[in-house]
Image (cartoon, rainbow, N blue to C red; front, side, top):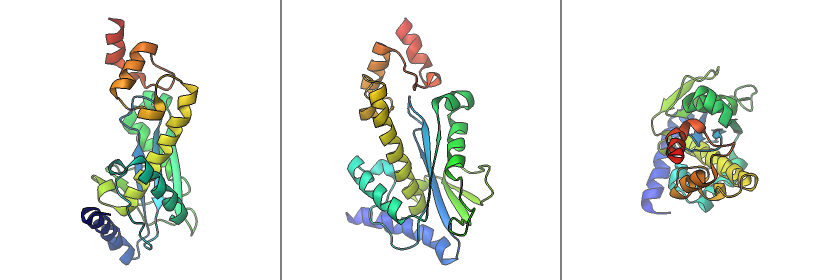
Length: 215
């Protein structure tokens, strides 16, 4: 690990330690897939113990797929709470992506703060807050680069969604979901124009592209 990465990890752990030292039990929340053209949005709620700190936990976007996968396994083994929530394409189309992401986050927190083992005093959320939950919440801008707990949640959400999109590749061959995971790469746009949208494409995200394809 580079000195810069070590410093980032220490800073994120120090951020969360402020709560731990006060006796405040925290969990982190983040989502993956808001900007994709296809597939669900996936949220993860993760409660990490104050010790041991897992080396390398960071904003999932800054990590390689192999590194994310290894950290995912370590987080799953260490966390005192793991919740996964999703909102599918139909829900994204019906309520828009922002509200669908909030729905996925609310589902991810199902079971949080219901028992002594899952007790949470404060939920740290990447950028968003005001979810319909009884637990106290705090939204943190760029939280996946600030909070160790949110960074852990970002890794769980990203790996979960990536694995789901890989599995969907077999159901919708030709679109390359295993490679681009539903995001707007040049290859993805080309396959949409060639084959047309699939059942898991977000039509509201593709309106201009589909109109272009008909011209």
